[in-house]
Length: 154
Image (cartoon, rainbow, N blue to C red; front, side, top):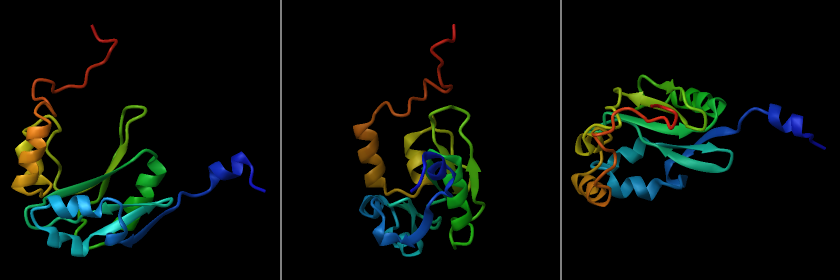
């Protein structure tokens, strides 16, 4: 019988599987400017949930995946490091409690508050997908707020 402490010390279960098994495969397929990139994509399965990791190529200059636990991010980075299309793989630690760490690859991403159109192009989304996103989220992200706010700040 496993005790609670045994469960907490087990290594994270992270593995690679075929891209088509990813829960978000169709999401990316319908939004990428070059869906052919998915031929070299992989799914990163965390516990039982496979999520898509899309390589760089064509207009797509970078990519990322979010993880709530640093151990999961580290394991995913190790698995993606040997895959074609995932150059300069790195972890960006979140300085905020309760926020996700990211595994990133390719060029450094533009800041989150910059132009939505440029941000979408950086990640290789089609013009139609970018236009739809901007129309549905006209104030996300807002260039007027370039620094996260703190409720305790004066």
